[in-house]
Image 1 (cartoon, rainbow, N blue to C red):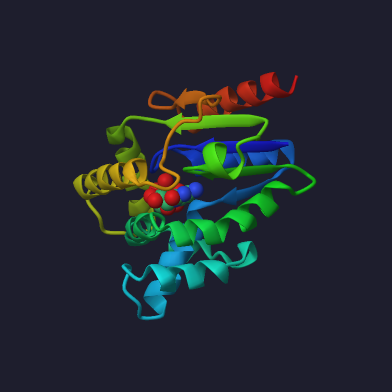
Image 2 (cartoon, helix red, strand yellow):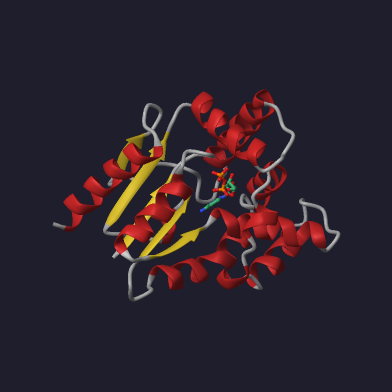
Length: 207
Ligand code: CDP
């Protein structure tokens, strides 16, 4: 079974994806890490974020096993990721890797922006997870402060708005809810409530 989770920045997709994967014994891929790793690799090679061809070369060399969470999770890499994620050559380079992951025999949960629409349009379960920009900024600000990232709430909110706009308006694989996805608005839910709601949707789909 494939569970596709999409949604805007800091909506809780990653945490939800991880918990669902544990619950069902599935593999989990946070696809945002792929785009973060492309940006990180490009910067590490001394190339500008405007270098689409260079970004595609980095993307072709990525492997799921080498995604290093800690260096990629910061706010700066999130903003850089959303720039390289708009390049068609980068997205094309990452399609097969994501589909191969989705085909894992034990089942897979993938979270991102275009999983239900482009990467796995035939996924058995599709969730579109969202929350108000202010609530998402509050959660991400807590998370980043916990990591020691000195960024203000207002800066996080501004970054989220810019990224949401860029992700939703790009020409390739824009962020949007698949017509057959279940909408999960977690603005008033904590992670346990969101998890229970998601399990109810998955169980109903597989019954
Ligand atoms: O955790 P957060 O929602 O802040 O970001 P992320 O999921 O790690 O994604 C970082 C950036 O990568 C996003 O702003 C998107 O531009 C891009 N992305 C994408 O285009 N497609 C995906 N499937 C996943 C991420």
